[in-house]
Image (cartoon, rainbow, N blue to C red; front, side, top):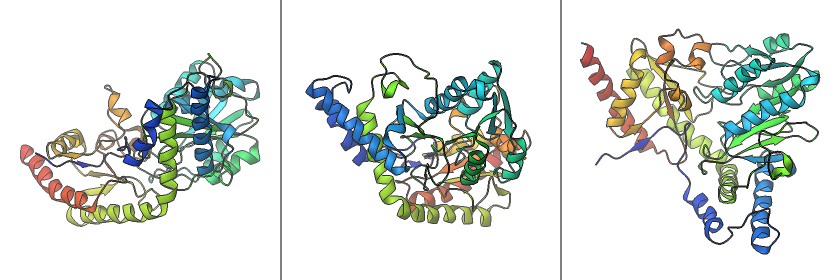
Length: 387
């Protein structure tokens, strides 16, 4: 039997057993609806309130500003659509970076059909925006700016504190998608000048099906869902208490272990990067090696970019799970070239060739060494097909 090695943590992570343990009582014992007035319901509501406090503390926010959602995608939709629809009289221009997650880009495309003007902030060859260019792109009718903290494909870290400062000075709302940064590097609503912040649980060894949007007080937002008025009327739907409790437990573990995990995963990433750069002359990195989270290594091989999917499948036959770009992008059957790789200057052919290796809490050095052994065999096997 093949022993698996999982390197697709940017797509999703294994639920930490400690998180699972924290969730179990809310399936079988504290199973009430948090909106119910009886004791079973109030116990669930207490768990909901405690989870809200726990996660808010992790991002230096007020608990009442945190809305639980079903995912980061829903939170991003609520942030962009909700603010746009509620504040249209203040402006109809929205600025987003060219390398946002598809859920931001597709939301903006939908808003363009509703009469909003969308502009895309370019990035340099490392995948990082220039704040000087951002300032030049701001208009009198600019309503909000959305720049993700860490890119999901190439792992680069954006200068969100400076972006937030620019927006604050201009009286413009600033939203950031922190799904790929939360739990890995510090995220702070106050010091980073963030008005709206998107989070989710399944990137931090928590359960799928739960996310959050933090909205600073005083910001008007139109709900996506209308119903029973849960989450202070901003997101109607019965709260998923087991998942929310797991989200809070996962967040707390990340905060407690962030420094040690950052160092450990940096060593793992550096080992793999050094191996690839020394042993494969056709190897090249996508993104900046320094201004990126260590949890991500996105690379290509010159001349083999068109074979990224075949490489992925050959790795899978070896029991090794990696990704060819974003997991969500694999649902796009018409265009498998990465918009992120094109934005950093790769051509249409090269933009199909990124291999994303992403590390998590359960990634071991032994697994990385297994990967280094397998990659030689995989590359030779692929070359033999075309030789």
